[in-house]
Image (cartoon, helix red, strand yellow):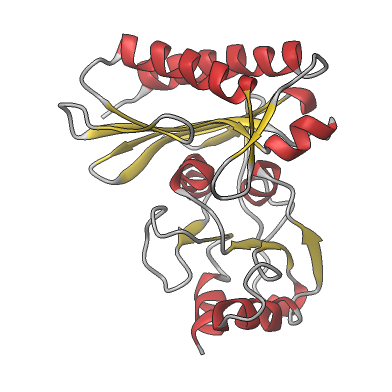
Length: 254
């Protein structure tokens, strides 16, 4: 099945939402702190309302899961999963790694993924059986075959430093060649385009990583939760070039 129509609308919507981010970034923003201690601005809410109206206006039978508005069950076997402003902290500080994330899930499988970083002029996308692209150029993951030579990114090892999964992640990071700090959705773009080899995030929600899961799969890579289950809904995620995936999962569970 082709997802050309859905992808075209998702891309156009993400780019327009990205323009709204840039338009409002340097205006006075009211910042609220949510229950999970993360910030949210009126731009997060503005962008999510815009995206939701566009997607459900075009596909009214589909479901919708948004970071700010929650989950809506549609009448189809499909659901749009959206983070309207991923990287709110960088957005507030003027760091260019904030993005718009739009994914389409069908039968619990990511079939469309769009990552748009407006301040970096980067748009990355993928659709099932159609490949992955970065600003129109086809991309693929790296060929690195050992953790010793790998360059990776991680998040959650400090927040979960006293828990077993945090300790295992820190130990795993010591085996990599080099560790970058987490760069929001750009970390996932870097994996899909072969610049990074892997990323482990112990804190991700579905809206943070479902778009990337589709893109990285189409680029030849792999995703799962830290126990190896191929899902973006379990509160953590491992993204890799595929070659390293079993090594990573083994290290996180040994």
